[in-house]
Picture (spheres, rainbow, N blue to C red):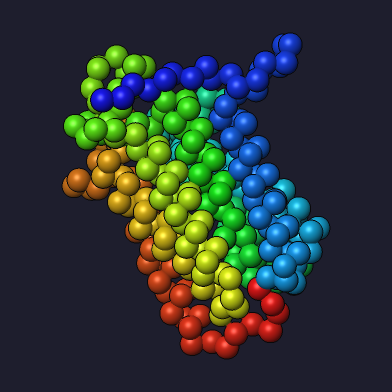
Length: 265
């Protein structure tokens, strides 16, 4: 049985300025996306430019923050925020929802794509291989913060989270998610995107891959105490992942019936 090391939440202290681990993980996430995107551009995997990449990241940051916050409110605590509407604006206190953040990014990418005479799926195919790197950094941040812990377990690597004060060994589900939704998904999507694919298929593989991995990991992750399972034994995370898998399948097989795009990828 292992014990969570309870890291100091402050990663760097510069005088009165405190940089928290989770904020640092966000910076690392977007930096990794920028580096991987630059590699794809320099190696002829797309005809997008560095300026396009910077625009995608800028719009993506807005989508993640706005969509993640609103998604948490709508998917996880709608009743609470209806009773406390002013707390919607307490950005420093609210949670973040991946699925809400994804919707936010999709909306912002759609607007950006229109301004550049591109399609949403073209933009998605370019950015999809890099997103898991950001997800891996985010899940590492969850682990460092000792949040989103797993369900009780007797496995050798099960971990006690002292902040819970229950002395129960649990799955380190944050690390499972970092490994599956982050590292493994990155390998799968990056490998799939190594050669030209019909427009939309790279995005589809990301959607299906994340949906499947998240659905499986949810069986080891402790449901939110204020929500619990929402449909039988299924959690909100699982319910929100099912449409991702379905939409990914539809996009993938529809794209398979179309010709390859002319531009390099």
